[in-house]
Image (cartoon, rainbow, N blue to C red):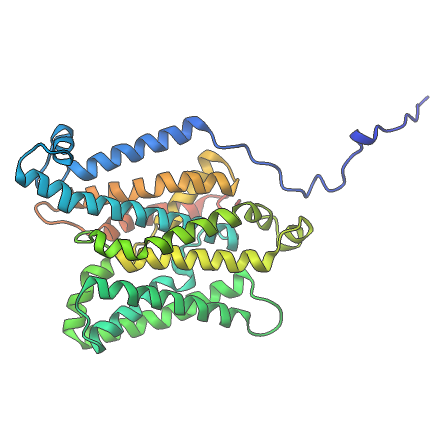
Length: 354
């Protein structure tokens, strides 16, 4: 005999429970402390390692009033600005990559997918070959303007036709426009030896010779991009389940899309303007953070802010050691590390589980 007992109203099965996004666990203090410690070690290495190696004690003395005049010059004038630039560029590229992967639901997405790098390089090539711009400070605003213009063009192209822009159409538009601009940039560089020589270092991706005079003008743009990333992080957890479910949870998908594109443009555009196109940082770091800290976008952003600059600083230090007394651009080092990582991601069966 069965008894039909009344269901407690507070314990009735929820038909939407299966589709409601599960609350991801909060940040794991152990992992976050480990990432913070790794970042601290990377900063010390960046200040101490180079063609003129210094001990941590010498670095601390140079940061104060001690040490020799040469040591103070190396630390204060060369390595401190370089380290700060690498920190900001790493954070910007990592957060931009995390936003792109969550927004497009594509585990292989990278900030360059919207044509940011190609647009920045195209405008720099125009400025050098046609306007005769020679200084890095001139490159910065040209590169950022190119990144902004191309991202806007990609959104317009992806929005044409029926329906609103969706991640697939935006991706295809970004890849297509980026390929066209890359070809034109290469043609401009090869047709003008002066332009090619001036762009060679920037186009490889480097933080060498980048001082605070180059970084400070774009810091407000990076800060705004990070604020936008924080604003959209919660909504991206719902978008990851699909746009229809996101709307049912009260997420304004169109607004989220615009904010993500704006944040990626500000972050990746600023980073590319300062250091040139550096690949794979925005691809690798969000995956590593997701594997260790879970799928919550808010946690991923926190972990990315710690891990991405660590990766860039370590790559920069490695570039100083690999070809001493010369230096290898950090963009080349990240490409060496990122290519095997890309193969691993492609072969992982669960790489698409964002």
